[in-house]
Length: 382
Image 1 (cartoon, rainbow, N blue to C red):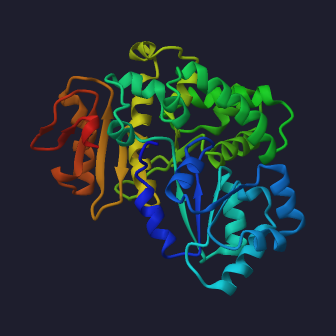
Image 2 (image 1 turned 135 degrees about the horizontal axis):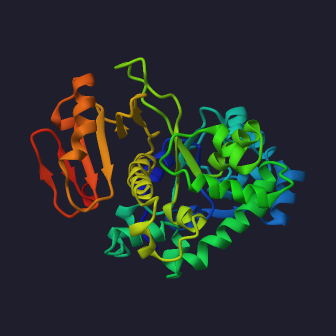
């Protein structure tokens, strides 16, 4: 098994809370991680119809059969169990009693807030980060191959070609999860919608535009985007609202949690297609931002990431607010540095009074360089 960066934080929270929830996309490695890190825990999956019926029809009996040191997978499938878990852990008053896991974040959070607030630590596990793959010696030597492969564990574990994995992942996701979350009659239209989202990676989200292109209403587009967020397919990067100017854009930018999945939706068949693809800059930007996102989640922190842009087109691709100071990152897919890369950073520093230590450029090249006004970083330095 490939070591997961989140493991120490998971073990730490198990000593502090009676319940720890591990959520994330389907097939991100949640069950494998939990079984390996906690081999002495009993594992129960509520996708098993017998176990699900047992938990639903006799929740007290189910908990009596699994009173302690139990992993309950896809716990959101039996929402009534949460109230009974609350009663049980309040009576026992011990840490590390249960680990809940699941892939439908909205349903899980809804149940947690209703019954287990204050009694549970919440961690999110995304597909492999670049650092995890690098540590395991699974990182390709070509950045476009990294982006094309994505990070889903099964693809790397079985050494599958992305075209052997992602189309079936998308199909099962739509046929299974989407129907559980919302009654969508035309699944082919929903598939078209996801592909339209992939074509807008790194762009400001325009609900009317995507709705018109798909032939649906704006309200339907908003509902479908919420489904994609809930099931860890996409995320929306919010604009930074520091009032350097009243002319800031208010729309979020759209990204995918996994670039391999996005490449599949864009019908890219080989990594070498990316070098000249119209979205190669957006995919590279997406890939870089994903590493920041995963680093936060793996440390048990809510990501404090945003972007900055005004209505004149001045823009910073990524603002990281996790430290004492904001750090700005311009992200460029080029392999050669150009002074043009610094224009956005110069404009931002004048407005924000930031110094050079807060300004960075991430590019696809191989040389790191400390300059007077910013630092040039490779993928290995983020």
